[in-house]
Structure formats: C-alpha cells, structure tokens
Amino acid sequence: MVRREANTPRTNGKAERFIQTLLREWAYARPYRLSRERRAWLPRWLHYYNFHRPHTSLQRRPPISRLVEGPDLLRLHSQAIHTSRDEEM
Image 1 (spheres, one colour):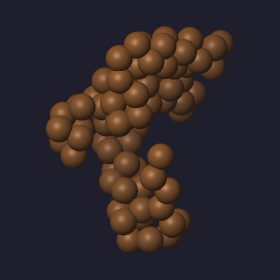
Image 2 (cartoon, helix red, strand yellow):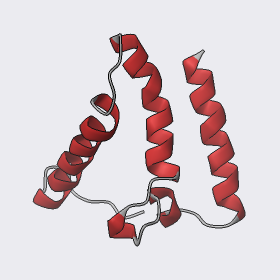
Image 3 (cartoon, one colour):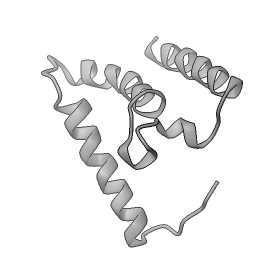
Image 4 (tube, helix red, strand yellow):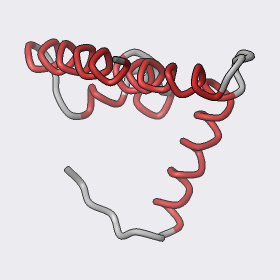
C-alpha cells in the first residue's frame, strides 16, 4: 500500500473528488423519504463503488482491483457483502 502525507494537494484532491462522487451518485441520486433510508443505502453504494463501479483512472476497473486479483477478490467480495448485510440489521 502506498502511504501519502495527509493534507497534501494530491490527497486533498482525491478526497474532494470522492466527496463529489458520493454526493452525486448516492446522496442526491434519487429522492429518499427519510435520512434513515439514505443512510441504509450507504453500505450498498460503498460496496458498488469499491467492487463494481468502473473508474476511468484505473482503466475502467474498480478500486479493489488495485489491491487483489483472482480468488482473493472473490473472497473479499463475499466478506464485504456479508458485512454490509450485518450492518443493515
């Protein structure tokens, strides 16, 4: 894993880009009746973002592809699904 110093322009830019995406694709992508309903969708969206959503900076691959490939990816994917289901309960 590559570590970057906090509060550098590069790190801040990545954080700001993620926040923009989060707001556009999760928080305001559809109308929610209650804040509770919006919060319930967050684990699902984060799973989609990290495991399925193509990222142009990663040659249209999801971020998880930078960490693992092959059988380990399937194992992590299964763990993430179970974890998000547990959080919803």
